[in-house]
Image (cartoon, rainbow over all chains, first blue to last red; front, side, top):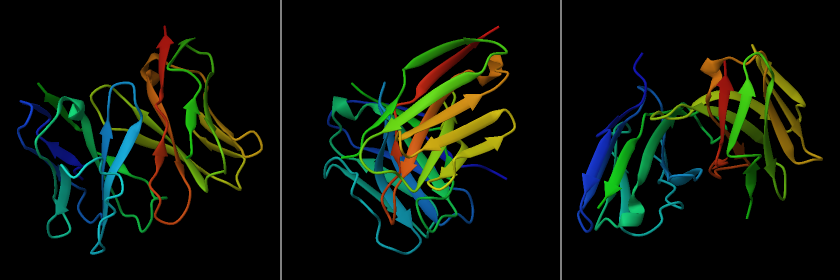
Length: 115
Length: 112
């Protein structure tokens, strides 16, 4: 079946603009995760959705970052008033999980460049 | 806070040899440790999971060990092939709803 898909694959924006990144998880996966991967850095956790529970937003770096998940499926990560330091690859993953221990399936990522 | 170190940013190895990658952590041991492979322009792909009470896990040419005394996991690829060239990430899971903590990865190049 289809894996996790993300769009767009690349996004170039000007500093100060808002961007929306989309993630389509694997059908039936209840958990969805967003990560950020900067050059030479490990994956940085941003936010975690699990079923109907309140999302874990503990990794969001500032209030310019927000995410929502509609109907328990598609998720959108929004970055408002983008800054150059927001440039990174944004990865989405999903799992069947009831916890963080289960295997996560990653999408190909969205490469965001803020000029 | 927990720190993870993967032995080096890059590792070059001759085809056919065994590649050994290291993941060291500080403080307390995780409940699980996972290894992922990441190719350029792609997301990580899960390879193996090893639990705190397990010493070794194998999958085809891959072997993972977990030494809670040394606070270290070793990831081995035997009979390495150029197709094994990729970045390998370790990730630690502790408990409850704490997020996975990822290392920065080691870029492995297998030279024919």
